[in-house]
Amino acid sequence: MELVKNIFFNTDKLVENSDVKISYTGKFFQDNSEEVFIHYGFGINWDNINEIKMERTELGFQSEIHIGEGETFNFCFKNNNNEWDNNNCNNYIFDIEKKQTELIVLEDEPLSLGSARKLRRSYLWSKKIRLAVYKLITYFPKILSGNYKRRLSEN
Image (cartoon, rainbow, N blue to C red; front, side, top):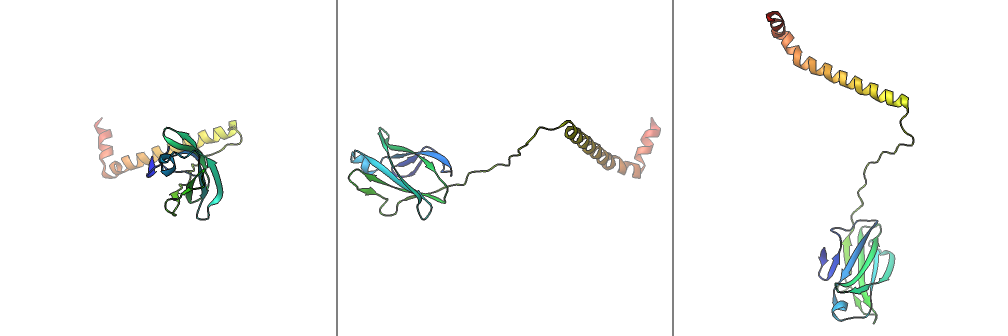
């Protein structure tokens, strides 16, 4: 996925607490710099600042980074001559999505025989109640109109 010219991620979106591979084909790759470092942090205040040396490949300079917690992922690039590519002093800033949390029910102990019977009993009662409601809805109007009695007497 290309989010900005010359910067590519191996994912569609940046999600907190996940790993992402970044490919950089910008100014330093085009100028054949020997070494390129990615300087990055999270949020408006650039929390957890880190700097990693990127690996040169045919596809550009690449590095795998763990996306931490924060609203944004901020970064810029530096070469071995201490020159910076910081998006014209704006830095590269991308939103981080929160990790989807699913409702997970953890059971500390397996169902005992007694609790299984209770579940079975409650299931049977719910079926009986549903059947009774169905019969009331279906046959009650027939009983009131007298159609139910006529059918019984016709047989």
